[in-house]
Image 1 (cartoon, rainbow, N blue to C red):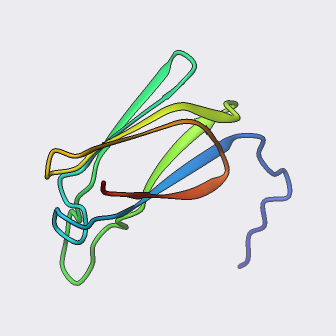
Image 2 (cartoon, one colour):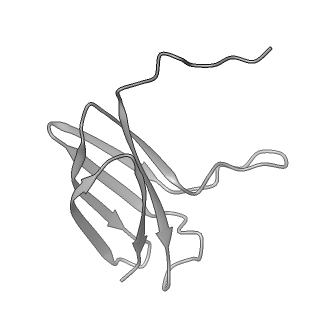
Length: 98
């Protein structure tokens, strides 16, 4: 059976990929905070492994109707902080550790 979503969606998304230089290579323990209007979301990067698998290291944020993230704040385990403002949705962004 093959299912096809022909209704589409009007919701937006944003994904954050990390490039770490000083912290661990995978960015484990990095805290990502995102603000869009009056909504705030927070993720901590980790693999959450189970037998023969692990979760993606790219963090996914559902943005609903928001067309941009007002603020994206990334706190690396090394203590370095990166801040991005007015980030358009529907893309994967790469945040480099300063």
